[in-house]
View 1 (cartoon, helix red, strand yellow):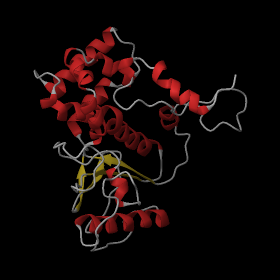
View 2: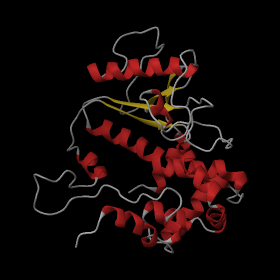
View 3: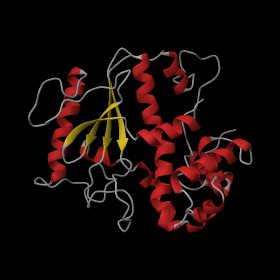
View 4: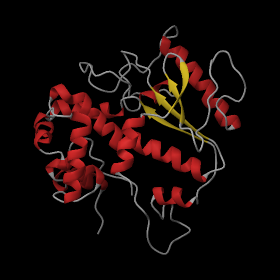
Length: 280
């Protein structure tokens, strides 16, 4: 049976349960290709399994994210207040939808309790605790998987893995609603300093701004990486830093702010928490 793509998109809203619609429903996602057409398939195993097996192309890698990835959900929080109010009584829908664990099981109840205790303490999910909810989503959907991927690829690859966290904030360049006061660089804001993008409220960098200076540094490192596989192959005073890769014993990462600085153990406590939650 053939159905026009537009019809499929229009019908998605009816196919999703209410709790699946918020926040950020991912309607069309990559799938593992099955069947006998081995030569034509692009993805035949889970990416996590591929990394663990070591059966991937061993090339230098830059991987990272922003300091407040979860700000991506803020528009949904503002437009669907009933959704986040319901989470105050029960975090299970959040766990079930995003971690693909059946709702109502002992596993979801236990994970829900641990998340509430770790992020919220004895406070309810409310407008006052939006920052904590933002961090739950940021860690659960982005930060942990970046962290795990960097560690596991380093363990299986002979090529260097360069990890970063983008923390720079510029008032006129953000993705979340302007009246949100939660600090941090939101999801995708790093790309606006490498490429021209319409995602930012102000897609153009003013020549004398701190953002323009940072963009120049990032472009230099990314060009170095494309040419040599190393973002800082030689000492460069204009950068002021040598970007050290992740090692077997050190989770080195570059913090990208007004200044570029090296640090260790990205979001250590939060990542240790999710390591235990998602140990499998």
